[in-house]
Length: 101
Image 1 (cartoon, rainbow, N blue to C red):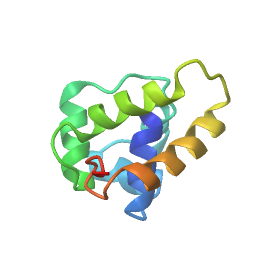
Image 2: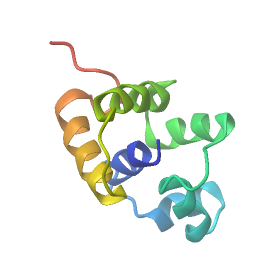
Image 3: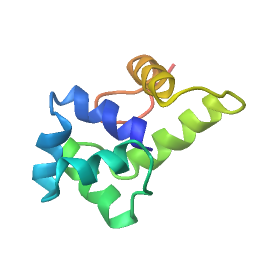
Image 4: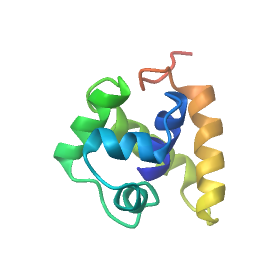
């Protein structure tokens, strides 16, 4: 989910520091969540969706869909972030819902 949040954060033009300050956290603490070192608690997911202007449950739905796409692949975190950015730009609206085909 960290790669998904990172992608939506970058779409807003925010740095990790910008988002961390909005959450009342240090950028170091937030970085650990975004890199996947810590799991995002449910209340934080809802807060992030609000801050990022996403529909409710968009982060979880997007993360599940991307996990299915990445299933069986191994790669560095940089690869996951690049791949997530590419998929989100192709398959998801700015609000975090799936594009209809």
